Image (cartoon, rainbow, N blue to C red):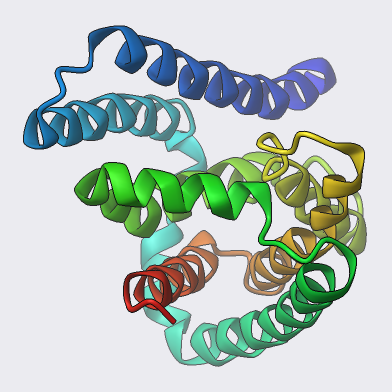
Length: 220
């Protein structure tokens, strides 16, 4: 029982990584060069990964929406509060890294901008819908019950979330970007830990990613 409780969350995480890489490989060898077809193809591949993870974690979703509807007046202000705090820490640390240490944007952000330029429709749907739901499912809901204390859950899942945004890094110094990403991850984990409901963290994650898209598309 204990082994299964430990293995399942990490199994889901590694499956998500494997499926994401498989998406890239399949698309690389089968893209058509047509903007509409390739965007649709990417959305389909990403949707299959999304559906697979949600299906495998479906039991953990039991009662989440009903609980949120009953307690939304309490949950929403908490979610906004912790997201704002996380956003501030993320913004300050990111600004210092970008202007003082590396004088550049993070490799993850650069990669996302390239995808947005090349496959805009897919990038918008993936960033604003698929990513927030699936990442909150994997990094928050998926690890529920694995830790004895709130703080251990918050910091482990928050830092793990940050680390997962470093795959595009090409040098050791770029690993410093784990700080801003972890600030945001810890904020989302704090939201989940305090509400014991995945909907508020998903909501704030969607808002955060949509705001980022707005800034990039607006050329700000």
